[in-house]
Image (cartoon, rainbow, N blue to C red):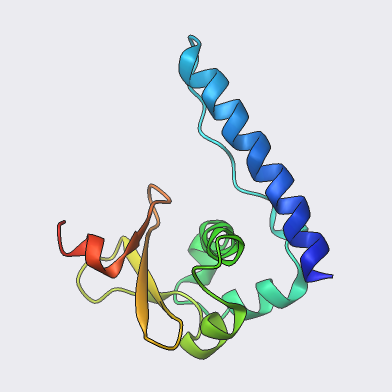
Length: 124
């Protein structure tokens, strides 16, 4: 079931990338919308719903988590163990999750939707 959902998400995100490229070269620029909450699998919603400030940023958290799962940068178990997205003590616009057995920290900027690896945050 999760594999079917991920393949649908790949198709959806491919459409976003193509649409974004078309608009980038045209006159209009359009940011892709995040998926509606009801389109995510219940398991992902359950795991991510434990995130800090989930009631405010649920769409951003779900979309970013799905992107990380699709790119194999993070696993569902990592989100489960971290307790979802955790608020950064340094900046209120950043949330992070610890992924993998080596404890790689991945940050999400909730305003822009950009994802950063821990090494990229050192350059900020």
